[in-house]
Image (cartoon, rainbow, N blue to C red):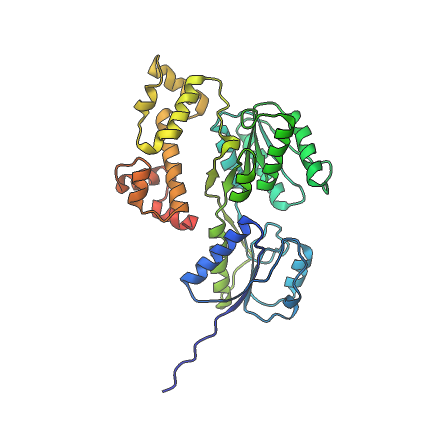
Length: 386
């Protein structure tokens, strides 16, 4: 009896650099998909973001490619390779490929929410016009701030090819012109680090005068910043996983239009660069800090109201005017955000998460989570790649 011949594993090239945290998380998502499904024979060559196409690409006869297409040389070379292909770069240099990228609109909104929750009413965006993703994030942030009724300053570099010292100096001069206190969105973590360097050199207090939030949550870079940099946590794992899933279907013969697939971020990793409340009312500041420190311990609004020596009704009205939420809503918001962090970043059971976030049991957590977010904790964990 003749045994069926096993199909060889598809040969797939990953043209993704390993030099930054976002790209490495993309690769982990791709590997996660492969481990859950059929094995692939992976070709991952040493590759930098701005590198020329590798020599082997010209004669490569594999089955599929996932690529961060960051420059026209790479794009030109890939156009001549006749295999299924998925793009995971913001540059979007080959429009007829399926495209997976972070949701820059959602990133802008989450940064604005993070800063406005801390009482900021002046905002600015510091980007790098050389990159599409920076231009898009800046446009979304300005639009989000404007729609909320505020103004937003933008950094316009004088020298696109400036070295790091010139960039930091130019950013410092720009920061001096801005109203204070102000919340600044950096287009990515490296720019955030440069903003913090500029503040330190010019004696601008962070976060009291300038609060800074970056994007990508490169933990090493954020920790090396002074003070440590708050940053948006992209769901790069899901981006890589979903890109691999689509490529697998393409390699099986399915055809897909060149649609855009935008993956929303997981949240903001809050660190010292934005750990401030730009509110002068001391009672409200004390109440918010108490909530953030103890929400996961199961406190209720009545525990917060004990901090107010006068009329509780007046205190609640003042709190809502300054923060935009009631004490009860703020407790719920902080608690649900902590649940999201644990769902997306750990393998803890729902029971363990409930215990760590002040819910009496997992069933109550599930009901509260779905009421606030519109989806179940389990669905959120799947979507976040946790």
